[in-house]
Image 1: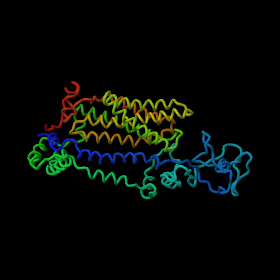
Image 2: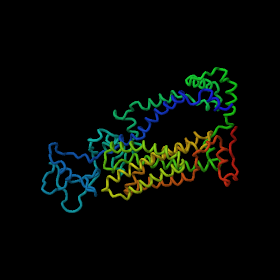
Image 3: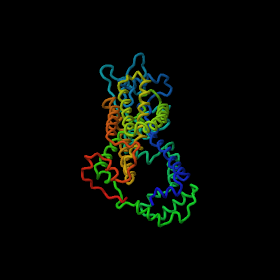
Image 4: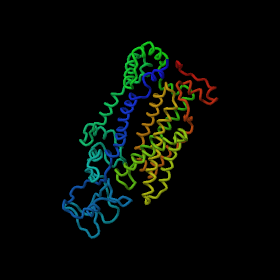
Length: 454
């Protein structure tokens, strides 16, 4: 008897499986909120040097600031520097009692902010930046990294936040719901059989049959029958991550999937976390980015059924790269086009992310499917972690971050084309099934595989 026959006896896909899907879907709905929280918690509000001696009742504050703060090349007041001596302005004679006008000739001298920063709290009352970087001694200065982006903090700052959390940042219970939801999900009966835990598998299968409305007695799922199934399902040696690279075909799939997942995550989080420069506030930007995800998923549903997984994956990554590349050619004055291209790029990257899960799971055999998904997801998270740091490249060249995101997405698209198509293909069960689908050049190579009992 095979395990599939046992599933038919307990009702196949019924209410028991639907309940498990619902329990697993709940944390998946809440988890993305945590991924994108740095957009709001680590936002960098507009700021300037905290200057002592500013008169509280001075009605012309802009004029006073201009006398004390230099201007950036774009005409805005500096966020990181101040004049060591207040500057004389046309038609003004205001200085503090202990201040004197600076040199009227030559370049005025400037210095970094000595007493921290004043923040514009009209949009955010409190963020990691305003709390941790309120003074220069708080785990590093705000202006240490030009072009700071949400989600970029030093280890010292994270340590400070860990031990001095702000009340507004404490968890609202989402993680506890995640833990509670997954705690109700039973173990996989198939996995239990492969581990020799026949009694536990027997108990779960009886519960499954009862919830599915199937009348299965003790004799219908006898210990002897389960022991036979366990013998067929149990592998001689447990699969490991090394098995993903032992044979030519699996090695090719694993390396390509690692590059593809890195590119998918890198471009997705690069677009999602870089919400500046679009002319909208952070809430409007996130509303647009969130709204485009639903049609992206519907598009994936149609494309994978008609075009196949490989072309859909490569096409979505190519669309992401093109949207980023075209946005570099759009002048900053054309704000509407910049917003449209950013939203289109986010939609393509979301579609690529959705396709990657389906495509990758169909490439690996059953005995290594979770192992392969775990490895590729790990590499993908590495790309997601590096994406915010790539935003710092705008200190070298303003267009370099988008060029990096687009270039990595293009590389991932080309890599996806090297993978085999899985549309309407039977899912491989063993390593041998994967290798048998390899081209003749790979089949001729000696394959030192671990033996898997059929």
